[in-house]
Length: 386
Image (cartoon, rainbow, N blue to C red; front, side):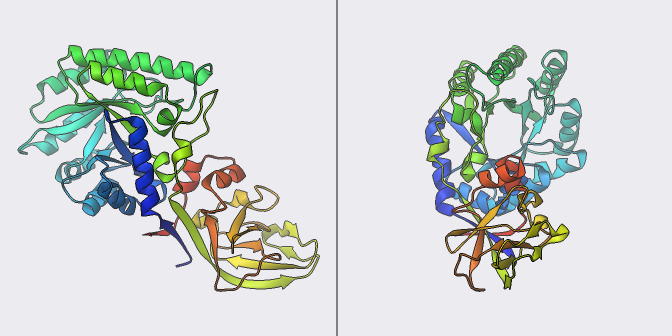
């Protein structure tokens, strides 16, 4: 095993409790583990979160949902399939008791056909498009058509109504805050349509990690859910793994300071060598040693998720060996990278920390001009619980 990730049970459970404490007892928590648990291994984190009492898990698709259901068992937690379903997925959704997000009549027709003969009506969550223009039914005539179908369906029922915020990390006085306000107004109008059609959802949800961290939308969603006789729910992902996006505006982070990192990504040292001043390193000979150096060769590269943008002269990335920074020298290769250990007492028995104590997902994101979500989701390594 050339690189691997270690997942802290204790910190994952701590982060779930931090989310639940801030959300409050009146808000249900959906723990998002899609994209293979944000690179943490969905089946592993699902087991920890289930043991910690997470009532809901959110997965990408039916295939991921089947794996997670097999890992956590058949009773709790509930599993929401968040990114839509294809017709071929419908039998698995029924068989494995997965709850799909729907927004088209075609979704309903396919599920009704697959659910024929089942003893109980099948629960789905209806997504409303309030400004993302991705998933979701548009309020107005299209939503009315969906609601009429629910009202007459003998096999399906609308258990939840949801939307997704485009600018949840934005606080008062920013353009993003006005977008959030507009989305809230549209969602409220859609919920009035739902109520007028005689549909009574058990759950209403729209908030993610940033919404909980920023804080201003949560009192609103609690109040709206209560006014419709429903439970409010928040869908948190990145927070579970110990991170949150920077907030825009003047808001102070309510959640981020209480989170702990969950993942440590490590690799082996494959070799050590001394090079003379003037020696070049890596593809393109982009690095030339300014003085005699000692280099360590690590068994990881961009194919494993350590991004090429972290190469020296570009992102200027580093790893941690024996508690000290070892900076990347030269270009990162597909399965290898080279770091400077001239100043570190290192042996071939030492491991290198690629992400963890001393080097964070935010560091990687800064080197690569991206967000920590993309860094975590891009890791290709076997996980194990510690």
